[in-house]
Image (cartoon, rainbow, N blue to C red; front, side, top):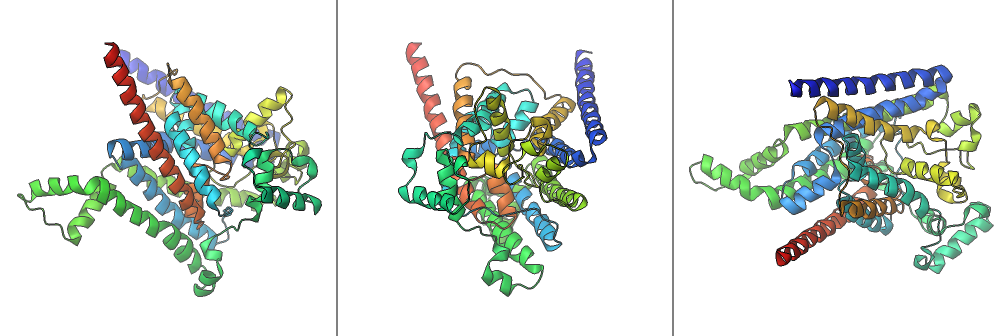
Length: 482
């Protein structure tokens, strides 16, 4: 009887949350039809949240499971999702319906991924994983997200604490740009500003389909499928699957196969392929959700591009200006509006908006003042996507009776704070996180995404090794005291 009551209570909350978001959408539509752009972001956020929670998709969990326990389930699911998403990205690019844009390519992406990777393991969740875990009631993830992804990011882009790391040539390059008229001198107030103007802006952006050699060799739309999808995403993802199989799965599969074959351990090509397929299908829930996530991420791009065509804009900042909220935008009249699945930048905007309420000028830098604007949270489309992820995950957690409010205890507070700040700081130099800097970029044909993954995986490995050392040290002390 008690379990039935719990089920009914969770179902009530799930449908109540759904109803509230329907009501919010109707109110936005009633206020101004332009807000349907924001509403679209919101509902895709809800979809992502539901899928992430159901599939337990988290890059931190994938790293922890793989490096600490030798379980590849999550890592395999992520690579499957990436493969399907790359094909959809290619289709959208071929039909001129893509909103994707590559990022500056450089060693900074690797270094940023390293910091982020350590942070996500300490915090117990990556950028997207932390959001869906908040929806499950996990306040450790809330602590990491709020103090790291929100406040930590905002502080990082507006302080001079890191001037000692800035080479003089970056300072000179940034000064030359200011002297030439852009960026405005009054927006060059932080270490991150010099880093952007003096280093990142001079780095090339690479998308394989747009490189001279491949665009000339591949006719028409085929360049998107061959260069961006096949060469940049699918083949590397398949090779990674083979590596994961060889290191973590093959030995166990051979033993299992030997029992079935009466002791024979001979493995031909067919046997190896069977082993890889067995690894991919070991967790149907995660693999199937990986396919669906890839499809929904592609649909998201298609819808946002359609919205831009419908309203005759390229950025939501233009619609905000039409509605009389030009103060929300940057000096270029824009706000952060990626046009696809993205985490971290919008959380940084929320942190900056809150800090401004305490008197901190957060518009005197390139990140908010020139690139992304600082819209009111109620008018921030990407932030509503993150809100949607949290509540979408809450809906799914309620429906599966997996919601449980949990406050962090003891040292979890420290790990959440430190890990969250490292994630926030690690996401800025690379201009993205596990979603924006890896998943989206690789699927769109940008090889810098693999550089970020290399850094993130290395950082996660360091984080796992640190936790193992800490746990053994703590256990030794407890045994000694006992």
